[in-house]
Length: 56
Image (cartoon, rainbow, N blue to C red; front, side, top):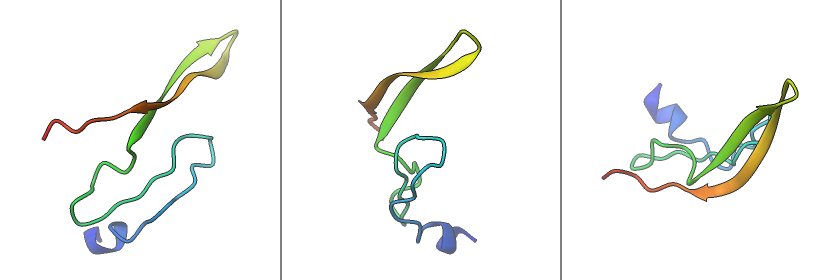
């Protein structure tokens, strides 16, 4: 199963999140984060493409 998941490249999130890619050395999926907030009962993107740095 892991080998198949690692083949995923440039998956477009249907909810508007960042594009995801995986690989043998990349299990995080995305290189950026989206910050969202609920405003008036609706999820609203506050900031896109915040950099993500692995703790490694």
